Length: 220
Image (tube, rainbow, N blue to C red; front, top):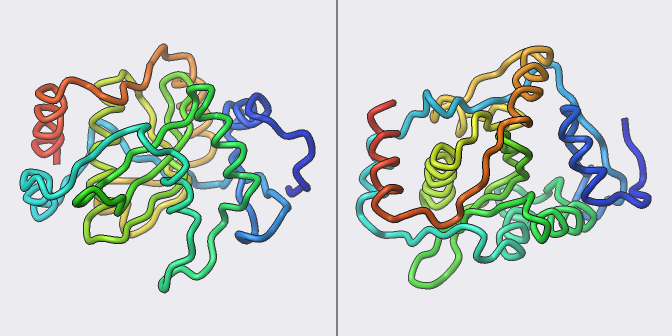
């Protein structure tokens, strides 16, 4: 189903997510939004997350500084930007506007990866109860988006989230343990998750965060 955006706001967007729908545009310049509810949904189990050994070395090296909710606008802009290997994206101006509104209301979050003070990767998504809907990620430095994903999962676990929706499965996500579940299964999980009283913690205690990442390593 598609429609031109008309009086679409954050409240309506959250209602759509509660029903299992999410929006995508045909292109960066396109105005119409398509509402999707795929037969198979990508889910990244928070209790069965795999960190590749080489990535764990990067995490421990201190090469990147990682923050959350520090520069949401730059993160979503990075996700929307064209790249050599991805000349077109599905994030148009309307999606940027809606998610910025969600962010200002506390229902959207970003993870930023920095190298030498420069934003080199990150991701963003929406949250509703104990469900987090991962939207997009970007990277201009090796492993930058992967590091952001690890930090997202660690924060979600520390914050009491129970569902991480990835929408679709990619080879990149499959390496971390993402799986596809049937639509009915996803809707059942979603109905339970949105009633969980989770609260996204952007800046958890550094020691707790480091311990959680080590726990993730052992899970994988």
